Amino acid sequence: MAFQLIRLENHQENVSCPFCQHDIIDWSEEQYVQPCAHTLFVAMDLGFEYVSDVFESSLSRTVDEIHAEPEINVLAELESSSLQDFQVLQTDLGVENMYRYIGVSPKAIV
Ligand SMILES: [Zn+2]
Image (cartoon, rainbow, N blue to C red; front, side, top):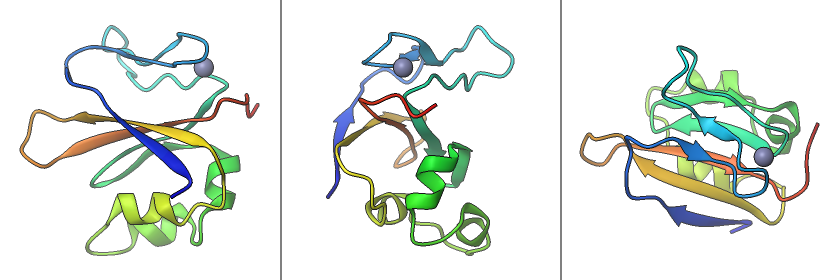
């Protein structure tokens, strides 16, 4: 696996970037997904909410192809990435067995 999965406990809190401290998930904003220069993607078990060009091109399929599947296994798609050494912050959605995944790269991608 090319990434390190980091489990965060409180899904009601903002999720900040470990590298620049920007709030990638910011609940005070109407558009709560606020990518920073390190943000590779924001996904839920149901599909991607945000994907950077760098991350999408590292996957074995496009996000449109992934979203066309009746059953999406987001973690398996993340594992197909050819990128190395990124981190995935995992938070639960307050619903059993449903998670959000926030991918961050130590190197700025934009
Ligand atoms: Zn950042």
